[in-house]
Amino acid sequence: MKLIIATHRQYGDIILNDLYLPVQVGSDLNSTDLGYQKDNVGDNISAKNNKYSELTALYWAWKHVDAEYIGLVHYRRHFGGKNYHHGKDRLSWIITKSELEPMLDKYDVILPKKRRYYIETLYSHYAHTHYSNQLDVTFDIIKEKYPKYVDAYKKVVNKTSGYMFNMVIMKKDLLDAYCTWLFDILFELEKRLGTQNLDAFQQRLYGRVSEIIFNVWLEKQFENGVIDKKRVNELPVVYLEKSNFNKKLVAFLMAKFLGKKYQHSF
Image 1: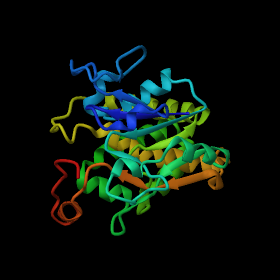
Image 2 (image 1 turned 45 degrees about the vertical axis):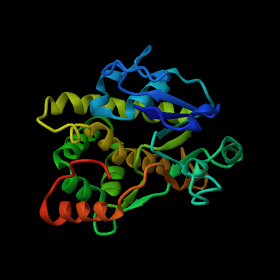
Image 3 (image 1 turned 120 degrees about the vertical axis):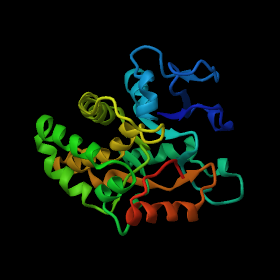
């Protein structure tokens, strides 16, 4: 089992144990050496990091990590363990190998708890905060390349909750299947959208599209019986950096009611 930490900077003692492998993302775009595994070794898409975000670490792990279970987390977002919200040291809230290993006997997939939007569907929230044509073109590609996923797509984008953040732990064979499907769609999406005049925050669209369509892929695996819902576990998300809920709420409402796109992460 190996959990990949997608990071562009040094971040905490959590990286020193053998469960986690920090991967320096965007190594092709930055000469800084953090002393971590770089994502531009071997078969890689490191040069796409400014558009694909943490997916360059996922792609590298898919191609290079040999483990029965592979997971993806972020330098500032992790899965929570038994000490979640106990004490002030947020690093101590993160799940440990001894806590995670027994779960693997019961679960094939481990996910962050669903993010709920309540007054927005996944599609409407994306359209208000980013650009809806990105999902529309993605849907066109799914219709052409993976028509059996059309109903799952329609079902997912009309939900008011989903598994976000590109955080997951899966058996390697499931990760292989997901990544084959995902990157086939994203590479085609990149061809069709071409060069877009977007700011640095908004151009990371391929990572955001993947958050939505991961749920599409998962829904189809449930329907096909490939993944049993009973063998999926949800864990809380540990934010190593404090988030400002009030600013997040204001930005959410301004996007929905005033059409103001997100300009940065919260």
